[in-house]
Amino acid sequence: MDESQRHYAAYVLFNQALADHLRIHSTDLQCVALLDVESGPVSTGEIARLTGLTPGSATRLVDRLEKAGLVVRHPDPADRRRALVALAPSARERIGAAWELPGQAFGEVLEHYSDAELTVIADYLRRAAEVGRAQADRLARES
Image (cartoon, rainbow, N blue to C red; front, side, top):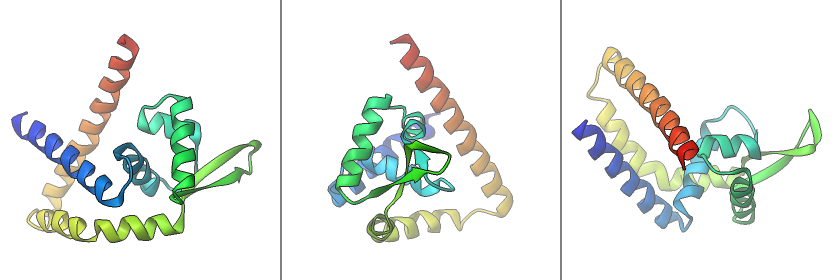
């Protein structure tokens, strides 16, 4: 548990440093990172769910990201009243350039593990993320 807490604290510090380097808010960076791993454009409601923000805060986040040129809105083909949000191509380039050296460093850490060990690590990270989301939901309900 101690190492998990150290890892979380170090990653929060890294995330803030990367956001500062990119001159964006850390929440904006997290949203961009989450959009990068989605298979396609998502609704603002889905961004609210992914980030834990209220729908109104998620809308303001998307407005801010759009103004900064990091996301684009597309009409939802299934519902013309709704827009879907995707990363702007320039955002991938900008974030990718800033992530290049850190990504290599994190990749070098992973090179020390076998495929079987990486499977266990990925399983732990997936399960820990599920617990984190569930606990965040629980805390939000209790507030």
